[in-house]
Length: 258
Image (cartoon, rainbow, N blue to C red; front, side, top):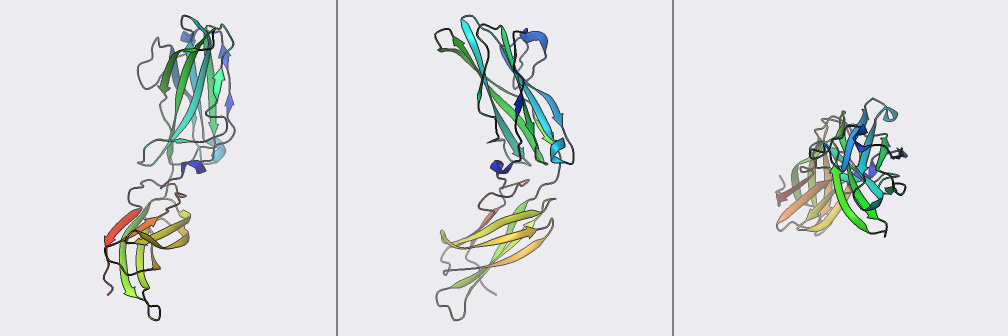
């Protein structure tokens, strides 16, 4: 799993531009935007080995409509790690409505995001609003930018097998289970946990300090006797950025101890 809230995003800067023709710069987005009243595009997508080298600059632009007095726009950042879907992430300066001066013919704003993570793609969703002189919204729009992709390795945790199921000597009603975990990604996985539940009830959780790419590890857990199924979940707290998340959990029929 990947925890989007852990993304390292530095302070954001913006450049408001008002009063210039909306056609002065090209536009792009989810749909054709030639002649559109609202647009968003990627101005810059920089890559590099260090965090300070990785950044994206998005530009939103809008034109005045009949009856509008002011124009507003709001940027939201979305991240996709590996094969996952895009998810909205938090960062300073995002989610704030940027406002034009009264009576201008066009309004543009540049949003810069710093210290992007490796192995992820970033895009912005911009919401646009036009307000009349009475302060009421007279029009709304939304545009989606193209993605700024940052290459790089990421981890991928997978629960391969659940075994064990043998009673613990000297501890009546307690059974031992074995979970076999692998990191088949290209980056180390650090500081995560693995939990086991027996028949739907949480039995035990263990912390894993580090799992290198390609490394397989067996962990032992203790719980009640299994009547139906045992489930193991790698990284239940969602702390590791991963290429693929659907193999973090495995549910198995009650294992038979050798």
